[in-house]
Image 1 (cartoon, rainbow, N blue to C red):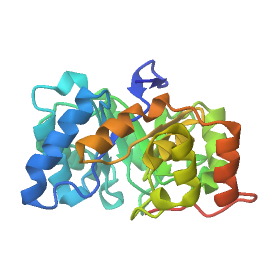
Image 2 (image 1 turned 135 degrees about the vertical axis):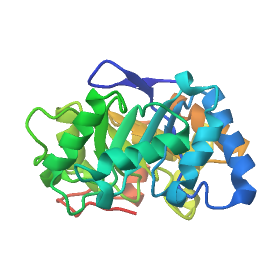
Image 3 (image 1 turned 45 degrees about the horizontal axis):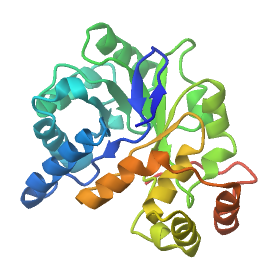
Length: 275
């Protein structure tokens, strides 16, 4: 598994695991835990979750999955904007750590921007970092103007945003801005939503050429960009294995041209897309 280097010298795999919608149904808990554990064995040791997912349920699933495996994984969680105050963040973090059964988070993100000033949120993150409760902090769903408001010298480890062939507006300004500052972009929903992207003729044709699955094409497409890592969610073993091997796929210029013809690159600044 290829990896990406963070600002402090740490490394994370380019392909991780998402957990959105996990922890919402008790009947699926054993399946979800098994999926995350298989993903870890396949090298997808970065696991992304949030207090919002299943109102803490996803964090509990992750906690079960990583039991006796903590040192092998890189855990990312996210704080609700309404908890992102000077006093709210430490409390939210402790609740997340309790659900995860961990002493620290590898990375803690602001889920999206809310009412509290970014400087106040960053101050709270840095206090948690100094206390050893988080190793790094970052943001999610922030555009260039928002990132420019971060305090000078703030060590933002990543910006997690929507990115896939159907949602590529960040290529115009946000992605280049992050790349110029060596700030990794963590792509959520890299396989799209609802399956429409993976049924598109362009991805199906590229997949046919390489003898792979369209999901692998979508992941390889995002990973062609320097400084981008992906966090697809999967629960079926076949899908997990396909995701884990997507980093080995190299798309040709002809492949990329076909995808561009189906999903045009942005020619002007666009509002940041979110789901």
